[in-house]
Length: 112
Length: 115
Image (cartoon, rainbow over all chains, first blue to last red; front, side, top):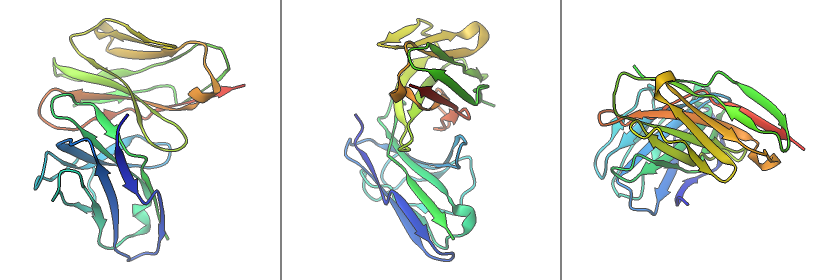
């Protein structure tokens, strides 16, 4: 069973606010990922990290930014939230070499 | 380019029926991995299975079984004697060896098991 935690689970916020979605894992995994999933749709990779101080953009263009200062922590930040950012955001991590990604419970974001 | 197609958008069955979820993939890579994940209504993705491209053995785990056929680029998932708790969205995913870290997901199949 994976130990990866996301907070908050649900967030309703007004346009223009700055928000940070938290993601932490206790498995010591080097690789971490952020996916965006609209209702009833597939997941799209928006950011990933190979390890501390490493961040890369995924396939889906996103106005969010990420940081990786500690192995266990991979927060995602939106500087100015907009209604188009309304979605579910899923964080995942994987152990190098095994390619199995373990997911958190997700954050459902609604921007009004 | 890599692509995963799950043609069945929604399936509804009655408890104890067997059900097969289809997954067809496209990739030019010779080494790749295939995955199935379950997403219950609570939202998290639960890992079910990983299969590499060199291992075409079918796998059975309890009521779950997987049929991997490279000749047809398919990796189908069967649930035997379905239960209400199996109700979820099931995603098939593909990752090529090396290079991009991207897991390419299908659009998912929503399975509803009715009592």
